View (cartoon, rainbow, N blue to C red):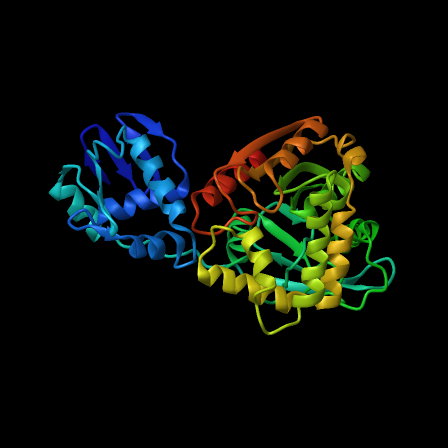
Length: 399
């Protein structure tokens, strides 16, 4: 905890406070401020800030300048007075505020042992058959009341517990629940050579997994396009779904919601990138998807996302998935959902803009929308929005 004048920077709670008032700042602004204060005895070069805040990922200098301006604004500082943040012209920045030292507290913080990451519970993987005979893989992890996640793109039950993209989802969702998830047809451990590949098939596959497990009533989680599948299932089976949680979800696919020529070209570009680049050793094409799903991800997270893409499905199936995603339209089904619904959406989602989460909230009668302070479509384990997500979901399911 760092204190100066009336300000407190609490890195444990990820808060900047003035007195008792929390000052809302974007995650990268908080991270820039933390780096400057932690290294207050010297100036930090721009390169050091790029490495520590953006993980070495290439961003323009304007990105850093805007974060510095936002940090100064939060502190009532500016580029002229430079009371707290000094510009070292052409080189970097330095925090020049007078920090209050509290030796006893500092010693306690220094001696406190690091909290180990909770271990993942052992998962049990089994298989069932869809109505048309396609083999579906599902996994059960954790104890407690069930929580089912409708399948979404790019999962692999045998690999997700190792992948930085999905590991924390499995770990935290199974902490208080029997977390049930499955690989959709064409993906992961489920059959890749399915003849049919439609939205109706995805809803029917969820029905098959629920029947195989003998579940009667349960909360349902839908992430990204899995949210539309969850909405359709909840509308079709109101007696089964007790509560619905949607994350980064949408009611209309990119082609359905595309109105302008530019929007239609952007939707078509997804398909072309998958056709041309999915199976190549050069990751440049697939990194376009990484930049949309994890714009604030580190280089390691982008590499993990790239590896996830290649391991989970074939180039041919990737195109088939994207073609179906673009045509999704569950607006009518959304109005038929009868259970309480929690909708969580990143405020600056680059893949599915916030307005489509708002559209879902307007369509589903008993729904509540929570805007998360993130740019990522898939939340990462280390960003503050992930803890907010987990707390909101747990409180909602506790009901």
